[in-house]
Image (cartoon, rainbow, N blue to C red; front, side, top):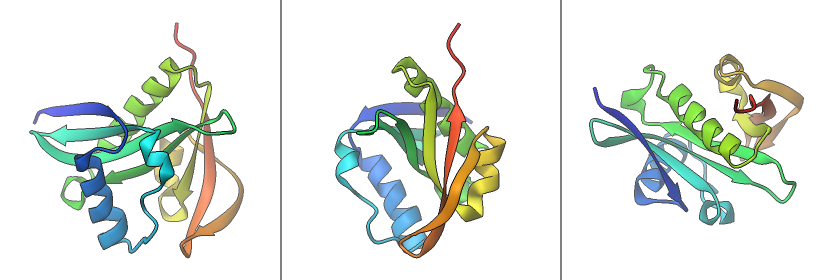
Length: 143
């Protein structure tokens, strides 16, 4: 199995297609695409040349780095591809000067992010009627 992660400045067609399939069609989100997409670095993970997963990172107005829109196509789940995407995004964020990265996790996958080193902070909140929680991770400084 050949796994490759590519990065893109701005939303590419493969990232859009994955998010459309997972967040819109599978999970029922309506407001999936936003103005951040044009300013974020998007990652697409390919398995044997097929787009299997995606995520994005960006530095917000708060000067904090944010990871988001992590999605893996259903037929590729359970292969640790989400962890690979997070690791790649964290390396990129670290190279861009990030010391801390935050994300808004669906509560149902909070355990997954905890296994990736993130800690929940604050109270749960609703995003399109889906419970979410803010999570944060301190990145290791490059040697």
